[in-house]
Length: 145
Image 1 (cartoon, rainbow, N blue to C red):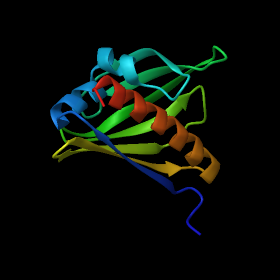
Image 2 (cartoon, rainbow, N blue to C red):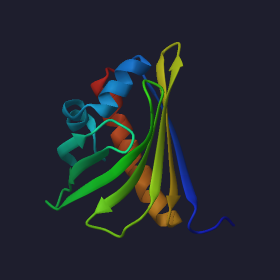
Image 3 (cartoon, rainbow, N blue to C red):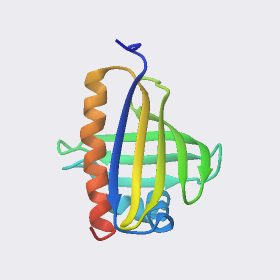
């Protein structure tokens, strides 16, 4: 049994576009707003200050009308191959979750690898997993799956 404060989620998704194009879709606010969000959730705001120490904010409007903001700070940027950033919800507890996204070139496009770590519990990990699947579906749709 792993430490309950250290649950990690790993997802992989093939996207039919170059790493540079996928990286752009992941880091430009106008692009993020078009694909971000779990199924049934609308992205109502995207702000990105793409530099180490810079922040981001993503607004998720839930089906009931409530808006949750995902906020964090970029820890590592290796365009167009890798992003590492902190992750927490506003309003919500002050957590220190971390997301690493890798954009790996493949013959058919780019394999996006999301590693979401420091998750507080298995049920929360399962929620994140559902959310990430919806996000990655939206990304694949935008980039022409």
